[in-house]
Each structure stands twice: as C-alpha cells, then as structure tokens.
Length: 92
Image (cartoon, rainbow, N blue to C red; front, side, top):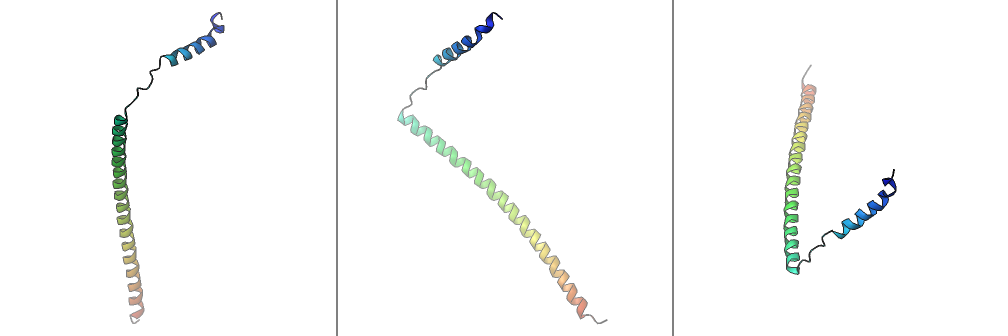
C-alpha cells in the first residue's frame, strides 16, 4: 500500500518523459515530396486499374449468366406456345 500513492505521479512522469524522447519528423525537401507524391499517384492508379478489371470481369460474368438464363426461359416459353398451337390445330 506504500507505493499506491506514487503510482499516479509515476504514470504522469512516464508520459512526459516518453514524449520528450520521441524523434521529431525529419524535414523533407520539396524534391522528395514530389517523388513521394508521384509514387503515391502511381500506386493509386494501379489500385484503380485492378479494381476496374475485377469489376469488369464480374459484370461480364453476371451479364453472361443473366443472358443465358433469359435465352433458356424464352426458348422454353416458345416451345410451350408452339405446343399449345399444335394442340389447338390437331383434329380430334
């Protein structure tokens, strides 16, 4: 219990001492800033390209699937209609 009253002071001391040892950010030149901006722009363009490719592939797959489904359904309905016409035109 003796050390209990010193804990809050110790925590404050560690917090203040820890911030004094933090290394300040080194100043970058304008040239390095431009290089960094160029690299970030390049990476962003790559990411956008990958996302676009993925989306286009997924969309193409979905369109193909939907088109195939619609074609099969249309063919089925056409068959049903032809069967109805055939049934009506046959003599009993």
